[in-house]
Image 1 (cartoon, rainbow, N blue to C red):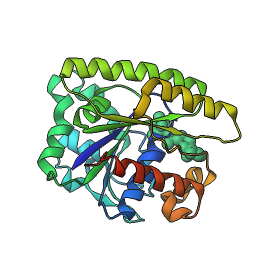
Image 2 (image 1 turned 45 degrees about the vertical axis):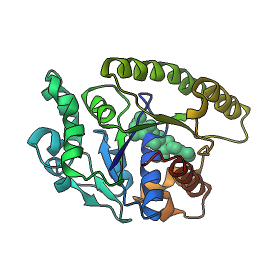
Image 3 (image 1 turned 30 degrees about the horizontal axis):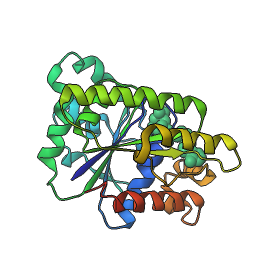
Image 4 (image 1 turned 90 degrees about the vertical axis):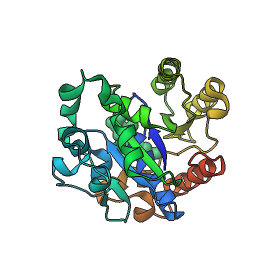
Length: 254
Ligand SMILES: Nc1ncnc2c1ncn2[C@@H]1O[C@H](COP(=O)(O)OP(=O)(O)OP(=O)(O)O)[C@@H](O)[C@H]1O
Ligand SMILES: [Mg+2]
């Protein structure tokens, strides 16, 4: 497996949308991906039409009850393999936050449950830097950072890069990463400016594919579907297909 953590501590930048639809794009390409919802808001879980799963059968069961990750895999309506989340995940920080060894639990669990065979595992993070996000970052082979095409999101890129560099220094390991600009609106000059500025800051870490603002990407979750199932001919589906192809071409999932 290759673990790709979809991370940005800023809220609403398209982490969950990217995680759902990149997973769906990879599934269509027969890469047999797995998505892990590591956000107690459970937006990825709900976006894929998985409601009513008990806490013990969610990723909270892994952290709290030592359930194996394999046992927690469920299949969403469109056929995607998912380890769902539950509101109970919000308690993990309070329960285990002071236990130093908890930060490496997900990395150890992934290594125990999944062979090293190139299966992509995509982790959707919450927008805060607590114990769960630290687990996701430490488990990562690669990090994918969605940045929405607006001014405040651009400001967050600088802080995010500094935080990852500090972590790299203390852990003495690199986190190969890519940045993808989301919610790009071709009618707005600002979108182009943000794309250029992100490029100036992160250089070739910036994906050339942008994800455009597209209504099908926003509507899919209310039908419990990824964009390929909900609107296969939409611009949103095209963008995520292109992003998957670009990242595959660069060996991001190997
Ligand atoms: N390209 C897009 N076009 C249209 N709507 C989008 C697009 N990307 C995301 N959205 C919508 O914007 C909102 C925020 O997106 P999303 O939930 O993916 O962000 P997030 O970074 O996961 O948020 P959080 O930090 O709360 O987890 C959602 O309602 C989603 O449907
Ligand atoms: Mg989210």
